[in-house]
Length: 345
Figure 1 (cartoon, rainbow, N blue to C red):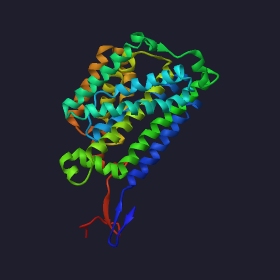
Figure 2 (figure 1 turned 180 degrees about the horizontal axis):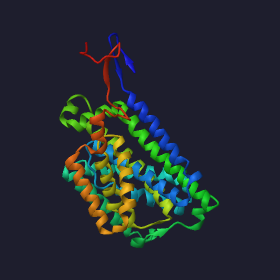
Figure 3 (figure 1 turned 135 degrees about the vertical axis):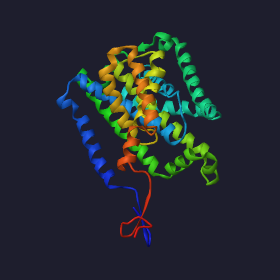
Figure 4 (figure 1 turned 120 degrees about the vertical axis):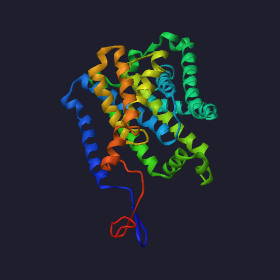
């Protein structure tokens, strides 16, 4: 909290402090799953966590930087394949290969950004999808990686994670929870920094932000590479849990981008809380509707359309506007020294 002679600038609110306690309780609940749940519950929590992390990264791009990417599956696939390359070809310990996969995805993101950043609006979205398809088709041609049919992790690599199956599942579980918490924390920290002010300015008006001294290209490139790196790490974690990878699965538009977009849209784009709410809603719907086959996707689409029509700001945006709820406040609010807002009597 910064103070001046007559005013003080506050970022935390009462609801944000309450929200922090609620979120901490949720993290503790998830983290204690091994004590009250079985293997199925642990795998479900890991899946929940990496979908939440993917949603936070897409929300950072689209909701704050204005980069509506439909090709984030490219970095999931790149991260997954990097895990296999590092652990099988180079003999790197699989747990060390996870952050290296994130680095590899970030390196691929730089030339990718130099291409897709030349596009704007819908053309940018299409360009990211086309780029992801190019990566998918390219990896399908590499016979050393199993070609179109993919490949599995050798038993030696799997056992290197931990000696027993239960220990391996516990390790993956711990990393999954950590990456969900870390991704949310990184987005919050970033938006509270000067980069957050720059991103807000870029989202509102690129021309105006440039005139205010914001380097639009450098700021968007930084965010794009950061999101790619964390997405690549998540991709490696996903396929460390699955033990097998194939191009069609690793670069799946529906699995790693369409569902994530659905999560962010219904939860609330441009809000950190949005992906959290959206992920919860998505898993609830999936639990009750997954057995309906193609009707499941149709119902998800219908829910998304209804939310966009009735509450364009998403579920959390609707709640925040009505009840002034801000669990992750990134705005700066000006108050008088006695705590009253300016202009009050």
